[in-house]
Image (cartoon, rainbow, N blue to C red):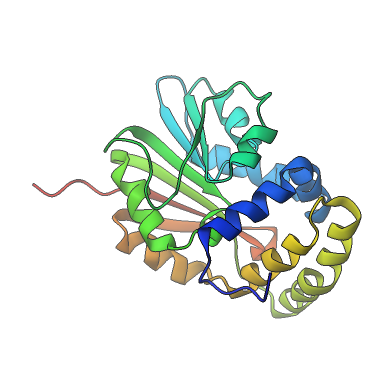
Length: 232
């Protein structure tokens, strides 16, 4: 696969994730130096779901995040466009649905909360995905987007970018079932909008009260928002 752009062929991206599914979770833990677990906990805390809530975990991969959210007592469904990823998480006892984030297979106002972690960046049209998430969420419902972002310290940002483009592919070769995919992923992270720009796009898609919190020096940002009331 060539250099990453934000113009993606959905079938290519799905095939790429199918290819890394077998060792996806362990690869993420190694590449993030264990920070992936902290990021998942922070996402769950920000989403703040509990018994009686219906929750969509989009781009859920192997459903490790969905399983964590379900411990709150909420009813949680894992959705992903990579069947291989969902299959790799078959042992996790949560509902799983294969689906495209830009055309979600759910009725309007189905969910009390929606979340997507490290997946919005890989959707062919992330604005359409944000609108779809708004469509399936009840008015007043919650959204949390956990995504790679822009480090707040310039020196740290330079070191981080070097890690992405040099060390990350090297480590991926040692632990991943498809190391070439991580070159694509590193480049897609570099091409992704910063915190403020993503917040603007979320608001334009039908969400209100958009705010963000930086994690790990801005390597990752949590964007939270509320589903805007429907027009009368």
